[in-house]
Length: 458
Image (tube, rainbow, N blue to C red):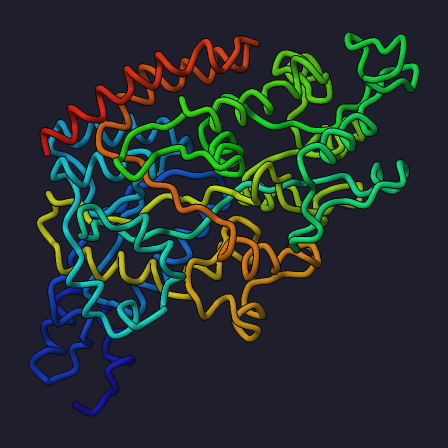
C-alpha cells in the first residue's frame, strides 16, 4: 500500500469494510482484532462516587482494549441493597458490584459471590506480603477462611469540630495522639461548656432552658450500628462476638449505648433528631453556622465537611474513650458475582479497583482512607493527602490511630434479617428515649436466633 493506515481510514471513513481491508495487509489494531467483552458493575454513591467510577472506567478500558465496563449507578446505598436483591432473585445481577458490609457475609455464604481467594493470593501485586493493612483486611474479607471480595477502602467515625467555637471557649480540641484523646468524663465536661441556651447558660447552670438551646456541643447518632459500635468497643464490649453473635446485651455494651443516648436525654448537650429537622440543617450546616461544636461522623464526610468548603475553621480528632480508644472500621466490598458468565474478565476489573490509582482518587477528595500499606508511608501520603481537604493532623488518623485502635467489624450470615427485624428497631427505641437495658436484651436474643439459624444452614 502506498498510503498510510491513518490516511486510508480517513478516506474510507473508518468503516467496517475499511477495517476488513486493513486486516488483509496486517494493519488491524489489537482493539479490532479481538472480541470485546462487556462487564457490568453495580454500585451506589453521590456525584463524587459516580464521577470517580467513570474516570476509573476510562483508564481501565484504555489499558484493557478487550474489555468495556458498564456502570449501573444507584444514588442511595440502602436502595441499592434492594435493587441488588431483586436482580439476584431475577437472575439479572451484574458481573461485579459494590457489596455493603452488612450484606457481604450473608451473600458469601449464600453462594451469591465468587470465591476469589486463589486469585488474590496468587496475584503478584495484591498477594504480596503486607500489600493490604493487616490483620484488618483479612479479618473483614475472609468468610470461613475464603475471600469473596476485597475491601474498597477503610472508613471510620471520628470528631469534626468548629475550631472557632473551641477558641472562643478556651478549650483545647481533641486530636488523634493518645495524649490528645479525651476521657469520657472530660468529654462530658467539655460538652457542658460548649452547650448554651439563648441566655448564655450551660446545662448545669440554674435556669438553663433545654427548649431554647442555641448552641449544642455534639451530634452523635444512635440510630445506626456503626457509631454506636465504636462506643461499645471503647467500653470493652463487642458488637459481634467471636461466635458471630450480636453482643449488644452485655453490661459493657448497654452502658456504652446508654451513655451516648444520655447526651440527648439526660445531659442535654446533643440535639434530638427533631431539633435538627426543625432547623432544616444537617450536622455540617450546623457546624458551619456555629450551632454545633462537634459532629461525630464517618471519615467519608470529609469530602463535604472539609476546610475548603466551610466558612469556619474546622478540625478533626478522635472519639472520646471509655475504657480504651476505639473506632469501628468498615466499608463496602468489590466483588465478582457467582452468576457472571465472564469470571476472568470480571476479576480483572475487581483487581483494578484494588490498585493504588483507584483508591488514591477517592482518598484525595476526602472520601476514603487507604487500606493499602504503601499509601500510609511517608512517600505514599504525598499521593493522597490534600491541602485544603485534609486537616493538618489527618494523616495521624490513618497511619497511627486506626492501625492501633481501629476495630474491623464483620457482620455474620443472617445479619440482614436480624438487623432489619430486631436491631434497627432497638436503635430507634434508644433514639426515642427508651433505656438500653429495657430494649436490647430481648432484641439481641431474637436477633441471635436468626443468626444461629443462618449459621446452621451454612
